[in-house]
Length: 86
Image 1 (cartoon, rainbow, N blue to C red):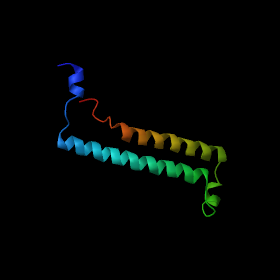
Image 2 (cartoon, rainbow, N blue to C red):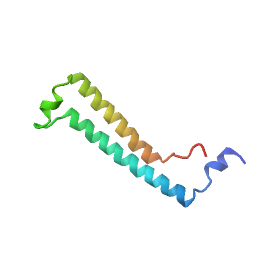
Image 3 (tube, rainbow, N blue to C red):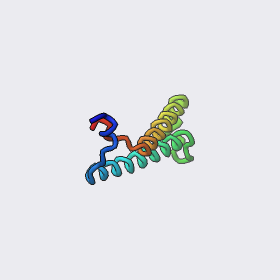
Image 4 (cartoon, helix red, strand yellow):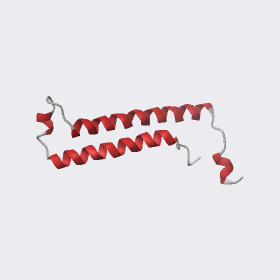
């Protein structure tokens, strides 16, 4: 059997459930991280005194990292490429 034949192999019901669960988890975590990046980039009046204690450059860097990782998690949930080693 060639490697291409393994890629076309059907997933079992258990594996389909795992893929669905991981995909939903990745979507949820991606949205959460993007919201966290927005929270740190644009603090509200109640949270600004706590966030302004820290270096503004580090806060912006952290929010950018949250955005990048959040979009990556959403992309990974969209691609659903979880069983590459099988």
